[in-house]
Image (cartoon, rainbow, N blue to C red; front, side, top):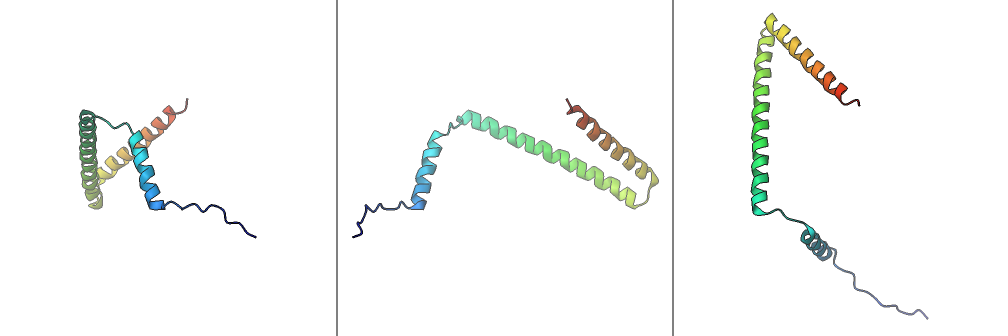
Length: 99
């Protein structure tokens, strides 16, 4: 004769997810309002500086490419010098990591 064991009710997976999420969020050490504003200002500043820097690079290389397309030989030389400078800088930085 087969005996019936205790049947346990299965917990709802969605309810368990939200309960565990709430428990984990209570363990978090949240920054103060002042710290939050300081970190926000840092992120915005770095984002703006990076955007300006990348915009200037884009403008410069677009300007230089327009002269290369126009077959201006001076810009071939300038482009080659810049390319060699970038490759040399990459090589030099790579050598600094070998300790």
